[in-house]
Length: 371
Ligand code: CAA
Image (cartoon, rainbow, N blue to C red; front, side):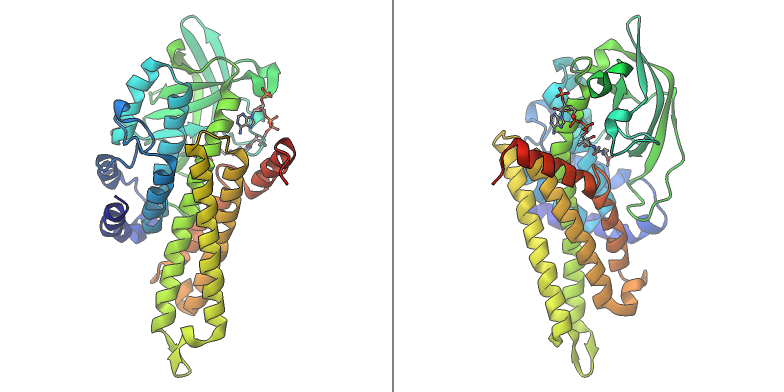
């Protein structure tokens, strides 16, 4: 399966990446193909239309897609890792039956709404309100940095049902796209242009009570637990971008000549490549370890944050070195490495900044009594 997905990603997705970067559009055509291959419901059991594979398989396949194009990787990671994981773990049977087959097949894309314009890292400070009314809830407030905003058909939205209760007052809702939801214009970002990002405003938007996921007040813990697996996905995505950058730099160093010989023969270049491949493999191993541990139903809060922290910072460093090895050409859009450099940057930010990963790891050291 890995070879098949690699061939698919390199043949169908990689050639689109430069164009999607320059003239972004949501890549529905290739997403449908990914859905047919089972890549949009990898962890969802076959009974709900998914591929029923494990987390280790998921990260290996996500690396392949992300090495071809990071925007596809982000859309894949969010729809697999957050809404489907939340519904699988905490959703009612009716919610699973209704939403999982659509998401897993790629007929629908799923999204996750936690951050708000004034709060990202301090997620519990959200002010979006879900007010109980007859038969359901009225949602009011603005969510920010919504991956696939306006394109996704299902949004897992975190909102406060009990504003005075802090994190314990947060609940989660499965919200189908309706006309009452107002999407902002796509954010103009440094990279990953085809993974459209918008705000989403609710103005007394009615959500039926059967769309509450889990119970009232459980939303924050559910979101955090889902981010544990989501962050393993972002680590895999960073590994994919870093691998593409390393391979491009390795090949270029073999072809480009300076002072009468290929530049790979200069120690300044070969040492850089040695550091790049060592960091790449270390990042991959941390990612695989976290995934392996999740497959054994162990809590992965620390391992997921360690994998995301290390892999995203490694990707930033590896893509930086790749641009340097390409010299002037690395700074030009004629080669892909400047795109890898821009695409990698957000992996240090979304699904929890590197600083938040350090907070999480630091807390877990003492909770788990790590030696
Ligand atoms: N698993 C299960 N429960 C968890 C948990 C986890 N990993 N982490 C925390 N919780 C629970 C706690 O046990 C606690 O529950 P109780 O009150 O019942 O004890 C509750 O959640 C609150 O926990 P904290 O006191 O630790 O909460 P905090 O306010 O101190 O915040 C934080 C902790 C780690 C800073 C958290 O706010 C955080 O992770 N912030 C970053 C948010 C983030 O990653 N945003 C990314 C947006 S999503 C995105 O980017 C998706 C996309 O589209 C690309």
